Amino acid sequence: MTSRETELIEEQLVEDGDHERYSHYVKKDKIVESAVMGNAVVALCGKVWIPNRSPEKFPVCPTCKEIYEKLKD
Image 1 (tube, rainbow, N blue to C red):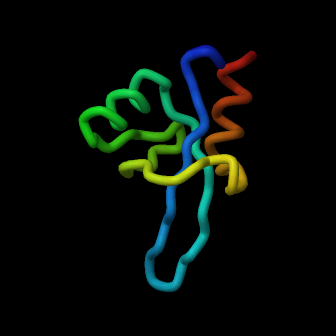
Image 2 (cartoon, rainbow, N blue to C red; image 1 turned 30 degrees about the vertical axis):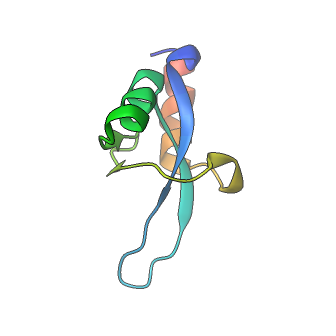
């Protein structure tokens, strides 16, 4: 996977008082598919969700970032 195939999108995680919001790395083709079909996406860290917010507003998921950095090498 290259940086051209991965794009940042965000997820809102709300579970048992956990109100953290992160931007996650996901394959670009899956983002388009999700936007058109409404399908869930899978982030590099394994999170699965249907994106619905702008990723620029949130910090990057530390796990996604670590995986992405390793893939760039």
